[in-house]
Amino acid sequence: MISNMMRFGPSIPALFEGLDEVLSTDYPAFAPGAGRLRAYPQVNMGVTENSVEIYLFAPGMDPAELDVSLEKNLLSVTGERKLEAVDEQATVRRERFAGKFKRVITLPEDVDPGKTEAVYRDGVLHISVAKREETQPRKIQINA
Amino acid sequence: MTDNKMTTTDQATASNEMAQSAAANALRAQSLELTPAADIIETDDGATIYVDLPGVNHDTLDINVDHDVLSIKGGVNLHTPKDLNPTYMDVHAGSYNRQFTLSAELDSSKIDAKLKDGVLKLVIPRSEKHKPRKIEVKAA
Image (cartoon, rainbow over all chains, first blue to last red; front, side, top):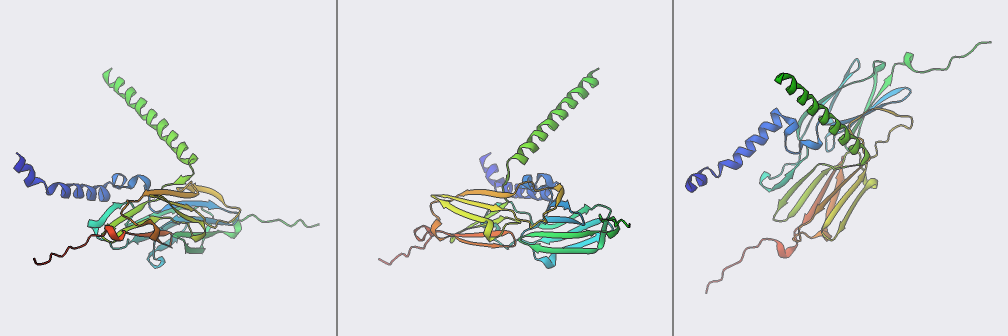
């Protein structure tokens, strides 16, 4: 009995690793450390009088690896986060997201895809999309 | 009859869960600090900690060591326009807070910290006397 356990011993960690891998790929919501991630990158969005401002929390990225596209009012951001190469054996804790991601965000319908700006700063991708001019509030001159 | 009963119980459970998650959300919104994700790597030379702090810059980052507790606090600054009216938010809190308890083997007086693109890298060396060393055996 004990010799059997010994024999199977080394395969147990491999089994857990396999489980982690299955969870990470097929059931991301249950992956280790997924509790605080849910969706990646996290998004905050808001509107001003003449623009829509989108903030994606994507730290440690090379801006060249980020792909932003806007089709009508559908904004998609794709990219791949590559973490620093480390010795897996020496890793005590792994919580940070790694791998490919895609996030699609529906913007208000009055945006002008032609007027989009994107800036990557302090690990946050800020995308600013102007609203179409005809939908922006304007002052009407009253003629005497 | 039995089926009906089952359904009622299920519904009760579901609504209970919804109430719980709503309460949890409210609680989360109240506590205005986020726990940032971190990676820890330990080698013979010491420990390296990576912490994801998107939106934090050098001015809003605060790192402290009190005895064996390393505290990291960071304020999120998105440089938003003044008249911004939020419509959707994954990130409700305005700051990060995380603490790590350092092993006595690490030399907390020699922490090297770098912040780049919202990722904080901390390198904490192992104190000399705790580094593994080879003992030479002299011939008798």
